Amino acid sequence: MNITEKAKKIADSCRFCWMCRHICPIGNATGLERNTARARALGVSLVVRNATKIDEIADNIYECALCGACTNNCMTGWDPKVFVRETRAQLALENKLPTYITKLIENYINCGNIYGDDVCDCIKDDLTEKSADTLVFMGEDAVIKSPNSVKNVKSLLTKAGVNFTFNQNNDAGSSIYFLTGKTNETLETAKKAATLMNKYKTVVVYDPVDLSMILHEYKEWGIEIKAKIIGFNEYVLGLIESGALKVNKSNAEYTLQDNFAYARELDDLNYGRKLIEKVGVVKDVLLIRKEANLAGNLIMNEYMPEVIKAVALNRLEEARRMGCKVIVTENPAEYEILKSNKQDDVRVISIEEMILENI
Image 1 (tube, rainbow, N blue to C red):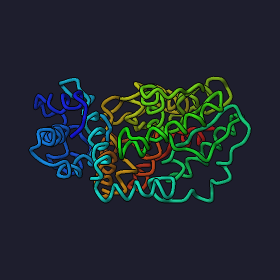
Image 2 (cartoon, one colour):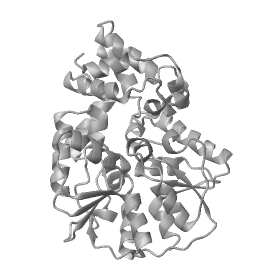
Image 3 (tube, one colour):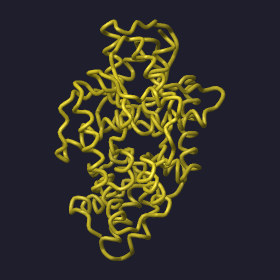
Image 4 (cartoon, rainbow, N blue to C red):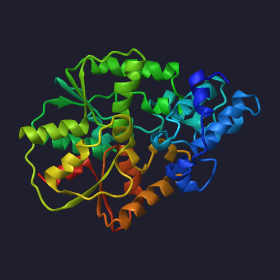
């Protein structure tokens, strides 16, 4: 298998501390030993040593959510996501992807998104580009799977008097990167997105998964972004603090569902909670900030829905045990997955919905 020496070293570095057994959201949902970074690393090592074929570990490689919980707790200090991404790229190059992944890639080629869905008619007019210095880049998950997010963001920014535009292109390359790692398709998609962003002075990135990719991977790949890139949470906080958005403060309790991209990849632990403090009171659940537990993944929901449902239910149960009544999400994937599995005693809203209900 053609992966880098760094990836091989990471796969062989396990000290058997078993931390990944306890903190992997997929492993906690399935209860299977294979769903740990340690087990996945052993599989990759076997392939590298020609003790098994790459086909034999393909399913397990795609059972990883790339949320980085194992990386954050790894005693070796290495990042297991590295060998997962490289193995996915190798599977793509060798044409040995599982059929359920091939289907998603075919959707991407034929329909422009991995889900194979059309953009909802309810937001098509909203996505029409208009003259503005600020682009709001919603991302593929929001535009295809969470049109209400587009509507709510539009409503919020309109109330703030922001001159902004959406665009038909909301593909930063995150989904194809998740499925195939760093391939030519991923790079070309990223370059196309960068060309769009460079037409504007400011780009507000809604989905933290996209934001992390733009700020980290684009830079590593030599893709230049001239526009000012800012995350949605930080941008909205600035609108409130500048007085453009006037909000009401109450004693209402809100529980932030820290998104892994904000908390672990971008080291952003504050903006979401600062937004809650502007309108209410922060009530934290267990496993927050860098220890945050994943609550859902829309891509994986396409090929392992029962497991992703269990992931969401686990997170909702954690909230319920802490007496949390309102969960506030930071990205559309966790928003949609939690909403579709929510219980009657827990309300799930997005950051923008929280602000809107306090204006």
